[in-house]
Length: 341
Ligand code: KG4
View 1 (cartoon, rainbow, N blue to C red):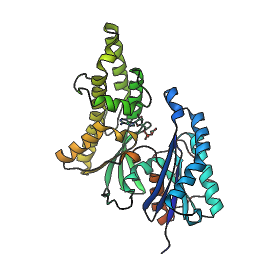
View 2 (view 1 turned 60 degrees about the vertical axis):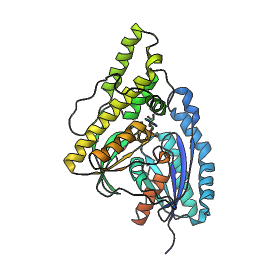
View 3 (view 1 turned 90 degrees about the vertical axis):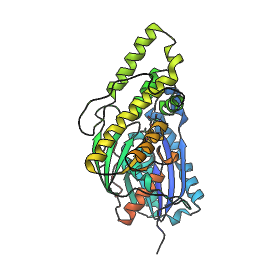
View 4 (view 1 turned 180 degrees about the vertical axis):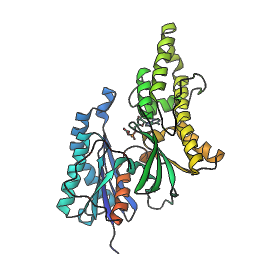
């Protein structure tokens, strides 16, 4: 049988990434991140698009070379069609369509969020990895999303709970900004939290029904708490940053795990995965391991490289769609907003 070789392209936010997957196995995954945003305290869309424009050709070229294939070997080009920043998406989408057309191969559009969930199915050569059994629950937590996804098949996913306001990563980043720490706040809070007491301070937790989340109340509670303490002691943050980070992280992890436990119990599903940028968080990873022991969950935690945006997850999704002949036509536009289902 002819090899199925998928080139995946990801450009939804501030990472330009390309990956090659052959018969379901990863051959290369190359990502160019954009440091340009750090000094602005957040992603600047216009700068992101320009950086993608500069990075896309060398990144794709490197991914093909690293994979040890020729571009003529590619069976199809899979690309993130959305959701994401429109200007960023347009670079990857336009490049992918043009490249596929020039090679005379099919185009495959991929939902970025579906890609995050399917990152659990990326197989690396010589590494035997357990993959989740359907149906499973996936906690998808990133800078833009906090949702619980019921995954019934690679192409059948249902969002059963989601944030009604801020995403978990967004809340962490904003609280870190209030503390005067750098951007993105997630990794900084994570590092500080390892040296702090998670029970030192208490912040408000939401009280909403079902499997939905809310993080805006926590953010406000954190802000007011700091404002009051700073009135008494201007050095409060500097003197307590480890405890603040640990308490904030513990509150967010508690909020996330509580709804996930509820969903697992009510739906009777013990296959539970985590995905997205915030899944790099040590406290959250530990909570998953703890739940595996305590509630007999089979947990799936991605490798660090597959927590953030990457093209390997787009290529593996593209591979499944290729097998099912799920191709897209050249006139399908990028979309900035869309749900996973
Ligand atoms: O999925 P992702 O890379 O992209 C966007 O959604 O934009 O997620 C980025 C988010 C940011 O909010 C970042 O602060 C957070 O993931 N993050 C973390 C950690 N690493 C990244 N949050 C907590 N702990 C971490 N170690």
